[in-house]
Every structure is written in C-alpha cells, then in structure tokens.
Picture (spheres, rainbow, N blue to C red):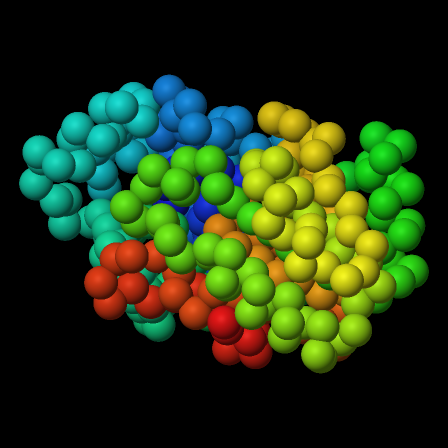
Length: 289
C-alpha cells in the first residue's frame, strides 16, 4: 500500500495526484491511496479540488490505513505542529526542502507514506498521456470564458501569470518574479513568436494595469472574472494559449505543461524560490529568464 498526502492549492494537488498515478502505474498490484486530512482547516485555498474540477479521483486512506505508516493527523493545523515535534516514522518519506529530484522514489516496493509536493515532471513523464487525460477540464459555463477560449485558440496568444498577494509577504517567494523578470520575458516572447494577443492572469490586476499593460505592444485582456472556486478556469485558459509566461507558481506551471501546442514557447523564472540549493521544477525545454 502507498499513501500520498495532499496539501496546498490546485497546482500542488495536481503534482501530488500525478505522483500518485505514477505510483499506481509502477505498482499495479498495490493500493495507492490519498490522505486528504491536511485539506481540513487549510484556509489559503479552496480545499481538495481534484475531484470537483476534473471529475477523477483515487481512494481516500482511512485512519487505520495511515496509522501503520505515518501519523494520522486530523487536520492541517495538527500536521503543522506534529511535523516539527514528533520523530520521523520509518515508513514515511518526507521530501527535502530543496525539492531535490529523487529519480528512484517511485520504484520502492515496500508500503510507504509520501509527504511532499513532488514538483518534477520526471516523476510522471512516463505516463504523460494518462496525466493529460486525468486533468481534462470541464466545458466552460461562463460566456466570457467561452468567448475568450475561442479567440485565444485562433490567434497567436500568450498567457502571462502574475502572482503577488501572499508572495509579497513570503520570504520564500518574494522578489523573484518582479517587473524585471516580466520585462525580459515579454521581450523574449516578442522576438520569438510575435504574439497577437496577451491574456493576463493575476491576483493583483491594478498592479498589472500600471506595470504590465504598458509593456505590451499588442492587444491585451485582463482576465479578472474567475473568482474563488471558479479560478481553475484561469488555468484552463492558460493551457489553451499558444505560448505562456509563467510565475514561480504551480498553478501556471500546470497551465503551461497542459498546453498542447507542439510549437509552444514557455518562459519561466530562472529562480523558483529563495530556498538555498532548491531544485527548480522548470522543464528542460522551457526558457528561463
């Protein structure tokens, strides 16, 4: 039996779910379960979203199934305390803060509990088609999304994701995707693909109007209507753009990775966060700035 802990917003959940699918593929004879307890009392995002957004799921681990392998924390707050105070369990694999790629981690035969984000496509590249199928977005219900979707698929469109909000106060993410990064990214994308349209996705549209829009020589759309539980539509729209400029965010990482344009150009930040020796999840064929 293998259990994968789910923690974070939609982008992080997608990495963890993809990792679980990779385990299931490697070990078809074993049960692969999800531990959803850390989604309880986690108020930064919208709870567990994989099943509601993509209408796919894996079985949920019970308390008695978790107990032999890991501490069965009842919620996120208890996990935050326990992970600092309690000794590590021998059958729990905790990902290092550096997020170093562990190339053989999916090969382990014994029952294990996996506590981490697993943000490297190498963990699941062998089942890419299955991941794409699992993360098939539902049809748009909002007229504005539907109209924009038609437009971006029929022109040379570029998505730009700007995440500020909680990142402005975070020592881990602060001052990475700053205005200099976006200036360089836009210059590069202009030289390489000559876009017709920019679609801007952000949690700080006022800043984008002042700082990003003046950098764009082409028509731009500020996608500001997908709120709260409907925000996954932003990722869907990003994935339909021909090219992507992403932030140091798993949300726009997936928007770019799910982009089916065979000639796509992805611009990503050279540095992902401020943790020393951190191994970036940026894919090898993406351009960094």
